[in-house]
Length: 288
Length: 152
Image (cartoon, rainbow over all chains, first blue to last red; front, side):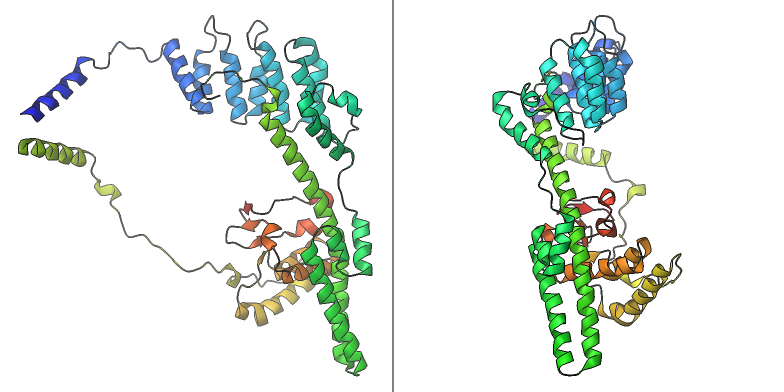
């Protein structure tokens, strides 16, 4: 009996306040609530779609900015820049949107775009984040082959606690720890495998030395024993391993230099991501 | 007490039947194959090539595949395998450079020390070491860090 009463209560309680047929899911307020929920749930594509449904609602100057943020976060950078650049000057997020344009150019690896936008527009219109913009502007030089500004000028916008790290990036860019392909080749020509050791491939270098050495010894030994055919076969093998090692040392130096560039850029990007590309926390969601 | 239990059982049965498995999604026997994929046995033995270098290297590789590799098994730890690397390198450069690239690769093949720290891998576990890395064309080198799984 008790169980029946509990079931009855449950059924009644669900029927007390059923869904109101007059409830308007498509009112701007409810769409906004849903879009905000999707935004904080990191479902940026659907969030942008929902925001776009109500864009143009009077009295709301954050919609365009949030639409642009959504596009930026789903890596649709062109639409993001398009929307950031359309944020109204009267909007509370106008300065932020110009900073976000710099960030988006960075995310697109468009470093010349960063500089062009900074010099032509950002410095004239952004009054709030000039220092942050200048930081991004300076960082763009670390990603290109253009001549770097003077160290002192370069470090001006950065805080004291950042300057140590930034100057190490700067010094690396100025004098990257490349290995010379020519030197690697010459070293391996003199002592097989030494070029590989010079570029950091110690295991490959030792193996190259042993393989070339063993075949050279076998060739020498067979010539000494008058086994001419075998001697020439081993000579050919030694010559091919020797040539391959000289060639490989040159190639290994090139690969090493590309690896150095790759790791440098990864470190720079990781640093910028850690600092969120110097953009502020907007506080749209609790966990942000 | 007993009635309550009956009611709970009844409701749970009702719920189960409401969301029961339907006929058109009935589970069937899956067609599983536990054989290891041995792509190396399905090699292209064709000798068509646009260049003399490509032709010579392909004939050499075919002979190696036919007399040695197909009998010996898939033992090269790299992808492309050393023989395929030779063919590819000769086609993309010339027979002399291709041969030098092959002997460099062959030497690296002997080195068993910490290879996993040097090369990315393909899905089947082989080390990924493409020809483009060693053609001495810096712009064409696409560095992939070790540990990354390449979808090739």
